[in-house]
Length: 410
Image (cartoon, rainbow, N blue to C red; front, side, top):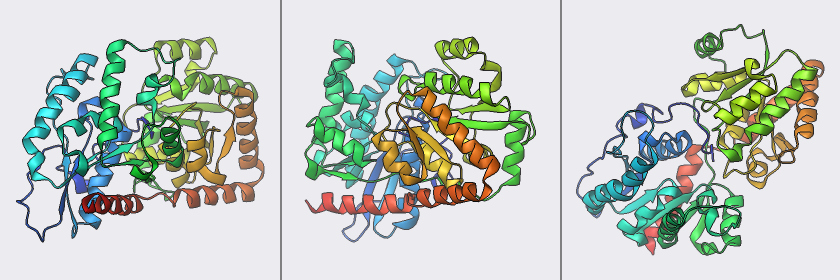
């Protein structure tokens, strides 16, 4: 999980959640009133766009589609310790473990139910009524150091991780983005099956196949080229190790030996020094465009414009870029891992993790189809859209409301 896929400023979803950056003060509880739900989100300063998206869209959809039964308030205090720019590790620790708990103690009596939208904040369950708290778990990476002996972490980090995990284990219910994440949690005996429900993420409403000429113009201005100058391949996501940017760059370098018209678009942050050095050594750095922060409209334009999306990750909790690309009609080639299979379904193509030759072969095959078989390509386009149509925030909110009812009835 998306995502920590970084797709632009997710905090600005729509006017539906325009006041989502403040702590709201709901009206006093009356028996006949809707259930007062606190959607507890990440600090905006941490800049995890996929996590921001989940919190924003859950709050917005509850507020518009379930207002008769649910009074949703989005909890997103300021970190309080961060200086300008991205907060450092010390600021994150103080913010998460000192400042956020203090804020929750101040407001917890105003709500009937609490939903922590990011499992890495699950330690907050310790400061809330656990029997009325739901946690969404996006993947198990945050807990991997506790059961994977290859994951070397400090004693302090492992203790902090245990505290977060114990919070999630205390929660009344845990939702998982995919069945794959639920199965992995069960395989490590982290939670019992009866306290977990799979609720798939949705696609942002701005992402779709319909043309947006204004957004297209803004995209091409950022790219500095006309739409027909290059055949663009797209990668959306962060540059953390599990995204396997090395595979992406090696694949692109090999593809350039076959197609000199190819260019790689990257959305989700600058390369690390090591990744940049690799791109330089492969001779492809000048053929890569890293876009700045963009909103959903321009992101949608980038998806529609690109020939293919490449998702080379070795692990994911969900894989938001897969359904986002498909929603825009863009075919996907992804690593063959359970979460991406679950999300991409039969509409995507899959390659073994880290297998550069297979990624190259798959890309060349689809590009040939695009150039030589327009009917087959159009069918692939429609199949991609149909697959993405299964993932909506309305369905997500409906299933969450069902979970809330279960918890409140206990």
